[in-house]
Length: 377
Image (tube, rainbow, N blue to C red; front, side):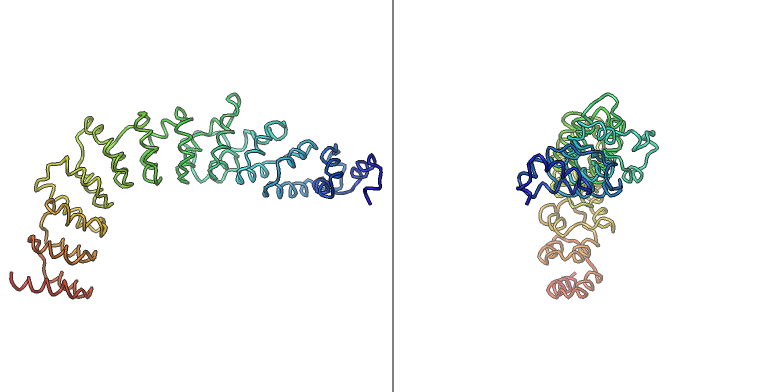
């Protein structure tokens, strides 16, 4: 039917249609002729149509939720249909940096994107992470959803009058809260001067919250962007960043007396075999350290792993004090019978409580062994 109409008549018909702009845009799918006409049509002001702003808001919101082609947004902007804050934040959540970049070329979208009233400018020390994460600020939304490319765009698109530059430390808080490693890496490499003080204060939280972050800490240490502290070394033990610990240990050793008691305790509490072995090459293990190691092993809060206890018995037996509760701990952790028998042979004491535990666990083989050797004592 349409093909019999004069070509110059179709644009006039389309412009007279009493439907919303998005529905008109969808007519481009009818055929190539409609596609060419609608993509080049000059759409009147929305007020000339029988649609509400709420209706258009909903229509555009649905487009933002989908993987809508960039040309659709170009058509909207060309026809004076712009985004509001909700639309922009949906695009950020969906990582549509292509559409966000397009916003930089329209005054209306640009004003929405860089409205300085989205997050009150307050002293950073007075802020709280809950308020920040509930903000509708596009920079905060991008940080929460780990959209590093959009964070970069908002911070680096301009330096003059860019209110987002005042909120960089909020982004650091979010990176720590949500453990966004690549966002933290961006801030350290590109915004270090701004976050320097906060980074020093929060570096211990960072090492404990982030997993698989040894490479980033190596960068911080090698470039001298953080101070090495005893607490930081303990964090390395917890995370089993053994190579990093060995690299950093001489630095703190030169500046203060190393706290070997604490390092050994953390190795035991977190079953870190490699760093424990490294420390034993440095420490002269006397009776004091043997007592300290055993004391840490027997603490309820220690809970060393089965693998760590086996490692101690098979490879580091000489550093263990012969305490009468150690065999009980080994039975609790279901250490191999042969290893517990080794302890008995080496003179580690045990009592009826250990035998009762074997009975409770129905470990008949070990039970017989302990009873037999108890008779001959």
